[in-house]
Amino acid sequence: MRIDLSVNGELHALDVEPRTSLLDCLRERLLLTGAHAGCEHGVCGACTVLLDGTPVRSCLMFAVQADGYAITTIEGIAPGPGELSPLQDAFCETHGMQCGYCTPAMILAAHALLIRNAAPTREEIIEAISGNICRCTGYAQIVEAIALAAERMRGLNQPASQT
Amino acid sequence: MKSAAFEYSRPADLAEACALLAQEDDARLIAGGQTLVPLMAMRLARPKRLIDIARLPELAFVRKEDGQVTIGATSKQCVLERDSLVRADVPLLAKVMPFVGHAATRARGTVGGSLANGDPAAEIALVAVTLGATLVYREGDATREIAASAFFTGPMLTALPPAACLTCVRFPVWKDARVGFHEVNARRSDFAFASAAAQIVVDEDGICRRLALGIGAVTPVPLRLDRLAEALIGTRIEEKRLRELARAALAEIEPLSDLHASADYRRRAAATLMVRAIAEAYRSAQGQASRAH
Image 1 (cartoon, rainbow over the protein chains, first blue to last red):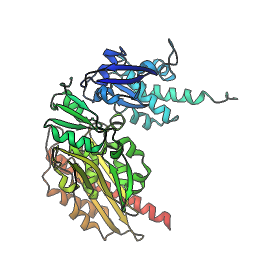
Image 2: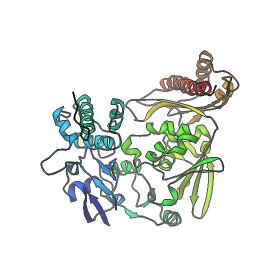
Image 3: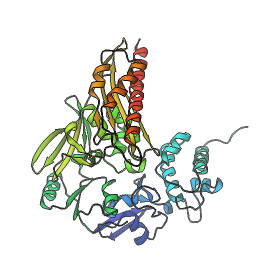
């Protein structure tokens, strides 16, 4: 079946089998391998992408269902080639990862949170990533990374402190 | 974990969807797909055709009609979570929405999908049964209604005919209602082992005037606790008596038992959660009354 996907701002016309998941379509057809295949039945959250700006599990959607939607993957988050978004930077700085398998999905879930909520509480951060499983870190540094990125992004358009 | 092959149709309207559904034995409707897609990935479901109703505008709405709040079957859970009409007029539904799956599944999952799935632990089903909602479905050209209490027939089983499409659900509106909800699960927003919901109206003297109670995940279908509610209506709710009544009410039920939670655990947890839910709703109503003075 013919579908049109807008992925990270680029339009793609694709012919896919109905049973192809959005995850497999992104990874195998568009070679965007940042969305990871973990459990492939909607439990782990490693395949999270943004669908019109909202986090969804790309393994729980067939590519044909995404026809016409705008999709953002981790590859579309950085402001430019070789650069990192404030969230990606904060994940590096606080070491909010170990093996890295859950990281792209964690960053996308956090990205969607910070777009809606510039000053999330710790509780709101935990809620936002509660659908994403990390088997390494114990989450503490991930939460720290998101809080740090939020703080920096809030400061971006503020006048410099007088003190 | 890859689905078997199937055909895919995206009908233009509900009539076409129902016609397609009636044509083939192995056709299934898909809306959010948050339960159906994993079942297909595990090959526990192998439909020959998926009929995608997620984009039909006639099935996605929230509106007030005849003093009830009507919610279209494919209204997304994340939309209900933030809907001002739901918040004001069906506060119990608004209260449970954050407990339904995770943000990423609520972004695709629909209210009708959750109801039609019939999971005993589903919070939306619990609210529908507790408040006495009415479900509306279309089969061929006919539109039919069924009470939530008759809709759920067992774990993952409903009275919905195989070729029918759930179109909307109507929730009754209580004036000045206050609500409480509690559940226990292994991880945040995972399936509940036991849950309890309460909706209450309290007068200015602190006397309970209306009360609807239900428990989920404990029995094969969500269970209303009408006798417990009747024992509390007309009284000022007092914790010790409430505790005794709740324990007695749950002594009569036959709970589910599985690896995660035994029948005894579910019975005890449900009694405690019910007490907490009622106490939460009652406290909230008293706060409201004292603010009015």
